[in-house]
Every structure is written in structure tokens, then in C-alpha cells.
Image (cartoon, rainbow over all chains, first blue to last red; front, top):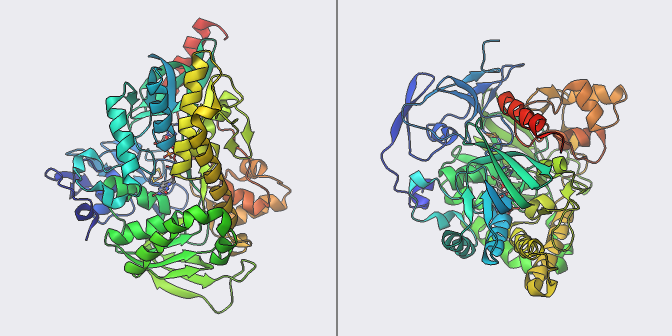
Length: 99
Length: 459
Ligand SMILES: Cc1cc2nc3c(=O)[nH]c(=O)nc-3n(C[C@H](O)[C@H](O)[C@H](O)COP(=O)(O)OP(=O)(O)OC[C@H]3O[C@@H](n4cnc5c(N)ncnc54)[C@H](O)[C@@H]3O)c2cc1C
Ligand code: FES
């Protein structure tokens, strides 16, 4: 059993997004975080100080650990932002800005 | 936009209030940050996933169907993807300021005669070595990703911490195909039994979960705790250990459980930012309300977990009472509490359960002993326990002073994640944090707001 089967999901066709240049498939409706989890990716940010990897923590937009760069916009919360066809998703280092 | 009542939060509390007020003829706007109503408990799979059996992930499904169907035939205006950053008192009633969509850059404003704060809460996780590793998520977060995105973080999970939320999370993950290697609960089930009287109505629910744990062969480790999460760039396992009656690790009981996911939670905290910026009185960490769910600020009501953590059924009862009170008060009449007696009885009963659960599920004493100096406490600013302890040794006596000395709590999440830990390390009770805004606000939006004020003159 997987969660899609459990909930009887019949989503439309998957679309493509890229994550750090790699093509991954995303199902319509899923957030960037859900699409990355489904592709087996659990971290997409490194911290400003220690350069440590981070991904989802709270899952509801409160902790800001899941920050990611989507289509050149840094600091998007992956757990809130829906994935859209063609999105260019990039891991974020530090503030995500060249500073 | 102008309305009679703006309800902020479309969880059980907000939904019940919006429907009760709508039925009594008020114009209601139901404002929520999420794309769909439901809140945490009734979070629905994203529409694009076209789930035919979302109830497989839910409890009390019929209650949700009732709410959803009544909402569809009501005149309530649902304003989804509205992140409210501030509610302002103006001479002609509260003004609700929101930012639109997931981007949260464009502003929107709702003006109302009354506002209900039904913003729910978020989880507390107390730090332990390794808790910042990818693969360590909050228990509710794992649940939210599962319910909303129909996705799980890994193949093998440990569910740990303390509190009633661990049970549905463990059974939910197991039903979705994750091997749950253990449910690690630091509380003593004996303490639950000591409150058996107060919890009588809750015991069948607990028994249902117990049966499901058994069916999925999830080992239940009571009076155990996760002492460390292992891994380099992601989680590979946890060390669990038994606790003695004083909450200390029993020497020699440590053992390692391999896993790629740790879903952890130590309780819930209410969202009170909007109430605080309105000047509402708090009672400890929750918004203080009277028997009608009114705050002490005229025109402002509050219901659900914002006023005290107690689950979805309590939130529904409180929301219903708030909606009826608002409908009567806005008509200029004094409501008759006899009209909502069943809801008031449910509220009293549920608050009793909540108090008993709270007493039974307190995080173990001495948890701070297990937080090593190199453990990150503030996840945003990467402030370690050692740095916090140095600040305390320098004489910082409370979380606020620690924050000024170390930057703990000054990052993106504004201290929501680390405040309970900092307070615990300082040995004081967590205090309300008085955040200026409930969401980060773009400077352009703030500037515009300021200009409007200058034009309008001081209000
Ligand atoms: C992540 C998480 C998962 C949970 N999962 C479960 C579970 O599986 N089972 C269970 O029994 N209990 C669960 N709970 C507990 C749950 O909170 C309560 O049982 C119940 O949902 C509380 O109802 P409520 O109406 O008070 O608040 P909620 O259901 O939390 O609803 C509050 C709503 O307010 C909105 N909101 C908050 N602040 C703002 C703002 N500033 N602007 C706009 N909208 C805002 C939120 O988006 C949310 O939809 C969970 C809690 C959390 C935090
Ligand atoms: S996981 Fe906490 S904000 Fe996204």
C-alpha cells in the first residue's frame, strides 16, 4: 500500500520539473516539498552558518526550514508552494542570495 | 471588502463559527492561508490528486462531510490563500490585513464589524542531538504532508515524543505503507489510567488506536525517549532508551533503531500573534476568553486551539458557541446561553479531557540533561545549547535576554520553534513572545500601510 492507493487517488498525468538540473516528475496538486519527497529527496537547503542540510520540518509553513529557490525566487517555503509544470527548483545555500 | 464577521482560520473552530453565524443571517468571510478549508484535523488531499477515498486517512469523517456540505450551501465567503499578518483596531471595527497566495507578496484587506480568531496552533518539539537532520520531521508535519500531499518521507519511521497526536500519526503512516519501527512515548501509561475518570469518554478512541497499532505490528515503547538521532547528511537511525520514574535515562537501556524518518512531537502551542497585536489579554500562552468565547477586546472573539489545546471536538464546540454569540451581539441582543447548552456541555467535558491529557503527557523532567552543548537549539540562527548556557551563566535570566545575547529566536520562524527549548534551558515557563506580525511582511506592503495611516490621520 502507498498513500496514493490508500486514498484512491486518480491524479492527472505527472509533469516534469527540475531539481538542481535533474528532471523529476511531479503529480498535479502536490507542493514542491511533496514532489521532492516523492522523488526521494529530503533536503534542499544548506544553512547559512554551518552549511548543514535541511528539508521539511513542520510541514505547515511555520518553521521556514524548507526554504528553496523556485524559478529564481529564493526563500519559498517548499511545504506551501505548489509545484507547477516546468518549475526550476534549486537547492538554496544560506540566504539564497549572493551576499 | 466589508463584511459583518471575519473568521480567521477555517479549521473545525472557524468552520463551526462561520456556519453558526451564517445560519443566523450574518455576512461571513472565512479567511485562511491554506488553499482549502479544513484546518489541521480535516486537512484534505490537494484537489489535483483527485482522491476518491480521502476518508482512509481520517477520523470522524462524517462530521467533516456535514461541515463541508453545509459550507457549500451557505452564503459564507471563503477567502482561501489569505495569510493574515495583522488585525488592526480601527474606529469602524477590525481590519484584517492579509497577503495573497503562496508567494505572500500582494496585500488584501477585509473590514468587519467583528472578528473571530480561530488560528489553531503548531507543534512543540524539544531539541535533542541530531534533531536538525533531514528525515526528522514533526509528527503533525508528517501527518499534514500525508493528508495533503499523499506522500510519506521514507520507508521506515520511528514516531516519538509525547502526546495524543502520536497515535494517529503512527497508525496513519503505517496504513500508508511505512514500516513504523516503534512508537516511543515518554509518558507513563499508568498516569493515563490515574486520570481514567476524567478520560472515560476518550478511552474507546484510545482502544481503537491500540487495535490499529497491533494490526500494523507497531511496537509501543512507553516511558522511553529518543536520546539521539544519527546520520551525517540525513537520518539513518535513532537511539532510544527507557526512562525511570524521575524522567532520567536508565543506564544500559539504550538501543539503536535504524530508520530514515523520525516523526516527533512534544505537544502543541496556540497561535496568539494576531490576538497579541490586537491587545487581547492572554491567559498564560493562550488567548483568554469568557463563556461566550469573547476576548477582552470589543468585537474580537477567539475559539479553538488558539484558546487552549484540546483537539478538534473541543474546537467545534467553541466555534459553534462563538458563532452564536457573535450573531446575537451584532444584532445588539444579549445571547441566551441556554440555547447552546449542548455545545457548552461538550466544551466543559472536552476541556476536562484536555486537562487530564495535559497532565499525563507532560514532557519528561530532566529532558534538558540530554541536550548536549553542541545541539542546535535555534534551528534558524543555528544557536547551540552551549551558547544558550553561556548566556545563562552570564546572567541572562529569561528567554528574552537569552535572545538578545545569542540571537536564538531572531530568525525566520521568529522563535516559534525554539522558544519552549530556550525557556526549558533557562528553567522558566515559556512566556508570550509578542511578535509584531503573524507573517513576514514585504517592506512595500508595510510602507503602503503606513502611507494610508498618514493620510487617514491617527486613529
Ligand atoms: C501539523 C498539525 C497536524 C495535526 N494533525 C492532527 C491529527 O491528525 N489528528 C488530530 O486529532 N489532531 C491533529 N492536530 C491537532 C489539531 O490542531 C486540532 O485537532 C484541530 O485541528 C484544532 O482545530 P482549530 O480549528 O482550533 O485549528 P486548526 O485546525 O489548526 O485550523 C486553524 C486554521 O487557521 C489557519 N491560520 C492560522 N493562522 C493564520 C493566519 N495568520 N492567516 C490565515 N490563516 C491562518 C490555518 O491555515 C488553519 O487552517 C494537528 C495539529 C498540527 C499543528
Ligand atoms: S516545513 Fe516548516 S515551513 Fe515548510
